Length: 218
Image (cartoon, rainbow, N blue to C red):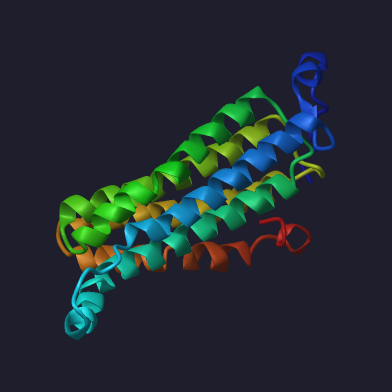
């Protein structure tokens, strides 16, 4: 097991423990941004304006928007779950973690926009690629959170290097699949969206291969 050194005096001065008000504010802000973004996703679905005899056709025309909503909600929900598990394992937060977390939340807040575009143009490369790019950037920013937490020894319990590498590999697989989807979007947009739908599967499978004491960390 790799030992973790205790953060030095300067680290202790800038870090805020998980029982502090500052740690609670970071968590509360994060949950609020996720909640607002996930709620705003429903506004990307237009209420049909049609006569009674044309309502069924109008609802059918809304199916692409509903599909974009469901996909985006599922992807944001998976990001929220991973973010929640990460903060459960943190003993502290510090300026670097806070800045990266704000960048992460900025991308979460942006999600309704590319989702709205995707709902209007569901199989157009110019809509699919930015949608997937948003989630790929979210994945990359989440990896930055993991790296920063590990570099600052911010875990509540020591995390061995071998376990850390496997955890990182699991989330790299998710992000890599989304990046691959961006490329596929220039060829088959529908297939690119299918890749996004299953992007969490390799992460789940790889996390199961993390050593038992750390398997439930994420």
